[in-house]
Image (cartoon, rainbow, N blue to C red; front, side):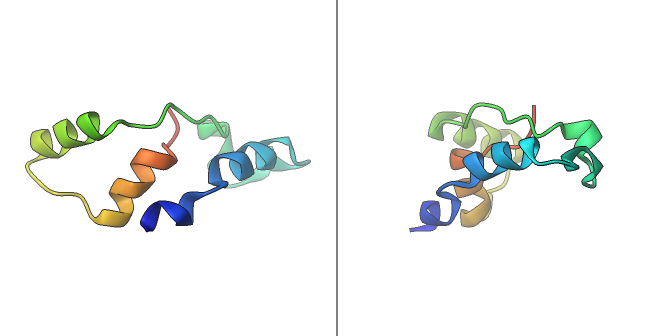
Length: 70
């Protein structure tokens, strides 16, 4: 199942934020290692309807398990 590839990613991102020098990582000043709440299946379906597309399976899985920064 594709969700298995995302196991532990949230925790690893939060650990990276605590690592010395993390603020020097490309993009860190803008995203600050902040994670938003995961999307629900209904929210994802609404997003796809608004966009008029079906998102790729792995990207859907990502949005359901490890959201991007807020």
